[in-house]
Amino acid sequence: MKEYLGMTLNEFIIRRQSDFKYATGELSRLLSHIGVAAKIVNREVNKAGLVDILGEVGTVNTQGEAQQKLDVYADSQFIHALRASGEVCGMASEEDDNIVTFDNVLANDGKYIVCIDPLDGSSNIDVNVSIGTIFSIYRRISERGHKAEEKDFLQEGLKQVAGGYVIYGSSTMLVYTTGRGVNGFTLDPSIGEFCLSHADIRTPESGAIYSINEGYYLKFEDAIKKYIKYTQEVDKQTKRPYKARYIGSLVADFHRNLLKGGIYIYPATADAPNGKLRLLYEANPLAFVVEQAGGMAINGKDRILDMKPQDLHQRTPLIIGSTNMVNKVMEFIENK
Ligand code: P6P
Image (cartoon, rainbow, N blue to C red; front, side):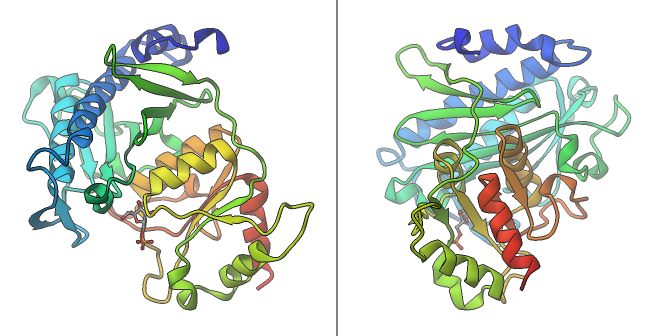
């Protein structure tokens, strides 16, 4: 894959189209449209401090979380891009209570549906911390030529045809997988194109970084408390004590751990028995990416990608990252 380094996202998608069974170009076009929307959102994120787009809208989303102006802006940009693609018959977004369908004959014939968190970590926008978009693409299971139905969105994560994220950080990157490995594209502002910068990403089997909000320590189950203590014990062979790195922005913590090795844990707590993160548009796409990069993602008992969703905005505990580190947490859970 190294031979493709520097190639633009669109060139790469077209060249790799043969990866897709029955490649007819729809998924390629859809991925390209996601890239365009990411560039538009990036433009606003990068100048958010200069225009009246910081702060809260004064409304709350389906989760009861205060919507940031950029949340709503990003949601609208991705809705527009996905509708314009003509390949998507509907989307489920963190910012919208119900599925979004399109009063559009072309769209209703679309083969795909998209689950998306348009701007994760958006409470960090005002303090200039990296934030991200997380997306997941499935083939629809309802009849083409009609609006998308909720059942299209309640498929297990292992049925994703593509999953990935955009990180709006010191540079802006689009990282995705279609089940043939993971590739990262860095936005080159001088030409306005995402260019392949990280070919065939593999995550280390072990790492020396753990990411968890220890402010909730007293609310964690004993197994998680024991794992946190384990990360702090001295052991040269396993490079412990590990480094604690927790940005409060899932995409930023996940991306760093993916490249360097590490584990991100948002477990069940006494107050939130299903954790905080969303299965459809946070856990599933990142689980697809991490498994394709050689890592693991579980909910504390089962593989994330095997979970059968019951609700669009269903929460799940998430333990995701380097295989040896996820297995160590499972050891503590199984031997509690
Ligand atoms: P807490 C942001 O709201 C988010 O969804 C993730 O990006 C982040 O990792 C997590 O929640 C932070 O949650 O409870 O630690 O503040």
